[in-house]
Structures are given as structure tokens and as C-alpha cells.
Amino acid sequence: MCGITGWINWERDLEDERAMIEKMTMTLAHRGPDGAGIYLNRHIALGHRRLSIIDLERGKQPMTRKAKCNTFTIVYNGELYNTEEIRHELKSKGYYFESHSDTEVLIYAFIEWGSGCLKKLNGIFAFAVWDEREEKLFLARDRFGVKPLFYTFIRNQLIFGSEIKALLAHPLVKAEVDSEGLAELLSLSPSRTPGHGVFRNIKELRPGTYATFDRKGLAIGIYWLLESLAHEDNLATTTERVRELVVDAIERQLVSDVPVCTFLSGGLDSSAITAVASKYYRQNGLGKLMTFSLDYIDNDRYFQASDFQPNADSEWIGKAVAAFATKHHYIYFDTPQLVENLADAVYYRDLPGMADIDSSLYLFCREIKKHATVALSGECADEVFGGYPWFYQADQLEAEGFPWIRNIEERLRILSPEVTSVINPIDYAEFRYEQTLKEVPLLTGESPLEARRRIMAYLNFTWFMATLLDRKDRMSMGTGLEVRVPFCDHKIVEYVWNIPWEMKFFDKREKGILRKALSGMLPDDILWRKKSPYPKTHNPSYLQAVRKELENIINNSQSPLNQIINVKYIKELLKSDLKVYNTPWFGQLMTGPQLFAFLIQVDLWLRKYKVVMVL
Image (cartoon, rainbow, N blue to C red; front, top):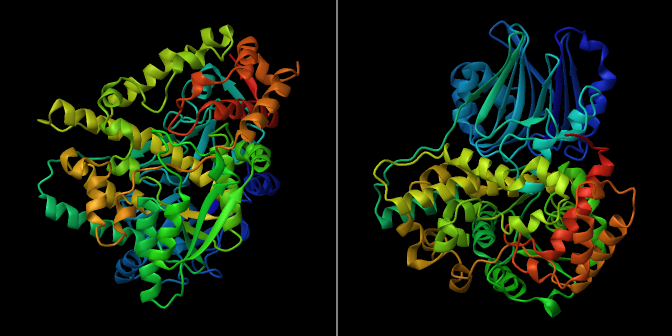
């Protein structure tokens, strides 16, 4: 994985702007600690930071190749899992390769097929290709947005980068937030509208899309959309097909020239990946697979089961390690680390996020990076196979609005009346929800209930999964660790999208078809373990710490947070037992302590980025 950035200006000679593109590129050093490269031409400057995964010596970027009487240059962040198939096809067309890297395969694929190459790619990617003869830039992002790509079009110039901080390093781009950006932050966050960058004039290229930029301007195209079709396979065939697709995706994503490991919580998703990976390692003489788990100091004392977290992971991790004979690493964190790293989480995300759910993942990845460069994670299985309660609990399934955003009326009390009147949080959330409903590719003749579940799946793909992928990329790449997500393979998603719910919910269990497909590969108790999400701390010292920190912030008259919150109400909340926030206000993990930590992150963000409100 890597970091990319670039700048196009038709009115200036950018060959004199090395210092500027180096500054932009340097903001992405954490994404690519193994090297840096710059490309300068008359009207374009490109920057690249490299994390070496494949062909460590000859895969350097920016990479320039000449073909068809033209010159092309690429900067690329990602990984292709069908590199060799595409390489073979290109060789049959006469292309000669100087390296073993997927970067070279990708640039020649673009030269040969143009935007059509995107349909051939199996992988996670964000890349830019400069066509020297046509003076045209091509940008593209993978089907689910596993890899980020932000841009701004300002004064007829295009500035882009893997992270917002690369854009903000350019003097034309200001850290400004208007009423819409503030609504994103305070109505929808930690999620955000697909394509929205929160900062004024900054957008994110949507998943499954590409863009071209030349002297005529910027144009956006779509190369991939979910397609709703009748599912013709019976249960047995469906089960076998799911198993084939899952195993294939995991094995493809194990390819690397550097050490690979897996996240292991003892749950269905991470255990499935570990089962396939450990077998692959044994069969290929690669030794024991490394696995890693996360927990918190004294969680064994304070853990309380709930509908959202029915049991702790520790017992199940031990069972999985024994079953798959992995070289396991137990990693523990304490409250001070979680609080201290809230600031790092904001910096690597460029926005307030999921509070300690982010900072703990950042710390986890930082520890893993000491042992490996690539990790596989079970992210996305719940969205793809229907693992959340809002897929099958009638009250949540049928309720209007985003099911992971709860208690929005209560959240309104946190905001100052002036801010509420400007952003209209409830209206804004409803607008974005209704806007998304219009995109859903419904299937003609489908029952209303099945159509509702299809809507729910689409909402999860485009919103909740995007939030978790954003978190996973930013926290892992903040440490220079590449995290791959096999359940996000587009072949899996395209197939499972059309499996009817009665099959997905096999045996009346969430992710039932996945469990059935994995039968025999996992111990039965792990196979049928009730879903438990990413672990969070239950130590009361964490609540005490964030309560104290937030008190200090709001008691500081210079705090920018005080400009947007209802200080009186927050003070009352700080003294309360927080029962009103026992139920998560976002997702499944963010309750009262995470609300305090989120507000701390908002203050950190406003200060760090010197955000200017343009309301």
C-alpha cells in the first residue's frame, strides 16, 4: 500500500514546483515508509510514498512507460489479486515487463484497455495515470472504496491525494467547513455521505467510479454498480459457491513478498480467514501463520454482556489458536494509551472518528507492524452476509433512517441552538437517507419484505461498511501496515447480493449461509458462536479519563468546541450516570464514554487543523 498525491495547473509550469509536491507527498509518509518519488512535467506534478509489498526493488513509483507512441505515468495505492492473469493476457498482446510488480501490470492494462481495464481488476486500489500526449489525467477507485482518494477542483486546477491532509498542504486548499460540512460532522459522523469530504470544496471519488481531467474540465464516470438478479441456485449449490468464493478470495490475498498475518478474535469471520490462511501456509511450507488479538487491561473484570456484545473474545481466541496451530500474539492496552492516542486517530483520519474504537485499532496495528507488513481482517462479512440485528429484527429493519444512527433527538441536545438552527440535523440526515434510497437497484417482482432487506443491504454497503473501511485504512496505514479485507471481494459481494434472505438466514442465524458454507473448516462452537463485534474497553477508568478531559476542554473559554455545543447540557451530562447513552448512539460500540471521547476529538480536530467555520 502507498500514498499518492498530485496537482494539475494549466496556467503554470509545475516543473518549478518540486518543493510544493514534496510537501504534499511528505504528509503521506506514514502510508509509505519505504520510499518516495516525484514526477514533474509542464502542467502536472505527482507524488508517491511507497510501502513495499511486491517486487521490493523494481516496483518504484511514479512509474513511467512508453507504448503506442505515447508516454504514461502512474501513481498507485493498492493491491491487485489477479495480477498474474492480467499479466498473461497482456503478454499475449505483445507487452514486455521489466518488473514483477502489479504497478507495471496496471499501467499497461490502462494503456491497452483505457477505463475498460477497471472491470478486469480484482483488488483494492486508487490510482492516477497521466497521458502525456493527450494531456489528460485518469483517476480511479476500487469498487467499495477500500482505498481512499480525495480531490478538489478549484480555480480550474485539480489537486488530489490519498488523504485530505495532502490537499490541505497546498496553499489553495483551506481548512474550511460550511453548514453542510458541519451537518455531516454533527448529524451523521462518524459516517459521512459517500463522496463528501466534510471540508469545504473537498470531495472523495466515490467507490466504483473514475474521473478524467483535461483542459475541458473534470468528468466523472461509473464503471461498477450492484446488479439485482433472480437467484437461481438451490441451497446446496449456493453453499458450495459461497465456500469457493470465500476460499479463493482469502488465498489470493495471501500473496506477498513480505510477512503476512491475520487478525483473530475467535469470531466466525476472522477464524474463517485464519483457517484458510493457516492451511495455505502449511501446504506451501511457509511455517506457522502469525495471528494477533486485541484486548484491554482489566476487561476480564469489568466486561458486561449486552445484546451488542454477548461475550468476550478471550476464551474463543484460545480455541481458534489451538484449532489452527498459529503463532499467536496477545496485545493489551490500558486506558491512558486509548486517551493519549485519540489525537493520533484524528490526525490519521483527518476528521473526528470512532474515538477509542479508532485509537485502539491504531495502537493494535502499530504493534502488528513490528512483526508483519500485511494483515488480513474479517471486515465486511457482516454487511455482505447480513450479520447485524437491523437485518433481521423487525423493529430495526422496518424503521426509517440509518439504523446505526440512534438517539438523534438526544444528540441534538448536545449542540448549541445556534448550530442546530443552521444545520437542521434531523432534516439533513433524512435528506441523505432519502437520497440513498433512490440509488437502490430493486428487483422487479420482489416481495416488499425482501425489497426492504435489499435496501438495508445497500445502505450498509454504501454507508456503514464505508465507515468501517475508512477507519481500517486510515488507522492501519497510519502505522504503515497494509490490511486486506477478503470478504469485500467483488465476486463474493455480487453473488451474495442476490441470495434470498431465507438462504442467508440459514438455520435462523445471522450469516447463516456463511456458517453453512464453512462447515467442517472451523470447530463447531466457533462456527456457530453468536456474533460479537470489535472489542472495546469496559474499564471504568476510561470513562473517568474522558470525563475529566472533556471537563477541562469545556472549562477553557478558548476552546473551539464551545462554539458549537450546548455547554450547559454537556456539564449536566458529565455529572450524570449516562444511562441515556447506555444504548449505542452510533453503530454497536459507541455509548456514553465514546460520546465524550468523540467530543474530545472534535475539539482536537478544530485545533489541529485550525478549522474555519464558513456558515
